[in-house]
Length: 196
Image (cartoon, rainbow, N blue to C red):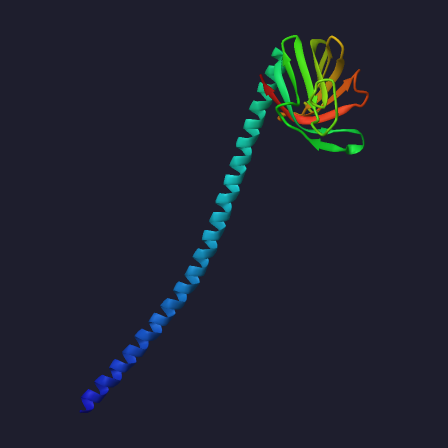
């Protein structure tokens, strides 16, 4: 009987010891889980940062390629600048239809069409001006930052227009300024330059 009591006592002590070891193991596992969770978050953050940098590099390569294609189109004199916004004096801005507001250059011929469609009357029937004619006095140069500064005169039968724009380095979006002998106000519009 005494032997049985000692055996039961020893068994209880072993069970207590095993339970204590299991709790220590569980505590270590929780600490390890926290460390693993922090490491996983850091790895995810690093992966996202690398992915963001890669996307940025790809966009820069794409912008550079589009800029080179735009320069080639300008050199070949086959391009179109499609307007989406027109700005007047004092910053008054109007969103415009892209299909009726553009500068189209095809060789030595150009078409400049501005149609405001806001109740204004104009000689082209669209509420603006249209100049179709020959291109003369072309000036093209680059500034210190690599931006292209371009200027040309389009002379039509009754209307002529002085057109200038700046194409920023590695970009295709530009602001075009039109000075017409018909419309006394300088008009500036924003749009994308595309090969045509």
